[in-house]
Length: 94
Image (tube, rainbow, N blue to C red):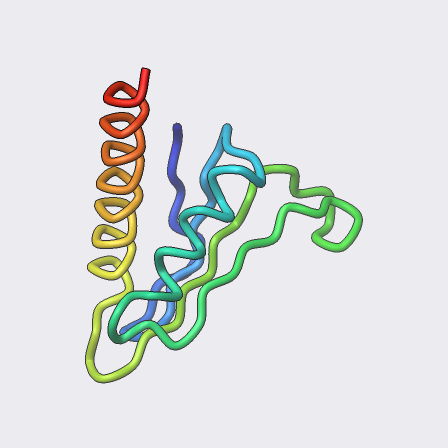
């Protein structure tokens, strides 16, 4: 996975996440939307609408002084916790 910051302000972040698809991006977006201080999270990976871009671009908007990079880090940690819990439950059930 390769990350490239496209734009960063105090309340907004646009970052390209190379090598990922809708599966990961939807999970990450969902975790971000549940996070405190995140007012919006979305991604785009449609090359026809984005000038030929094929890698997903994640956009995060925060509020209440929350740094969008911190929100992204917390969202990624939440994804890891969810997948670890699923793995443990699966192994227990098997």
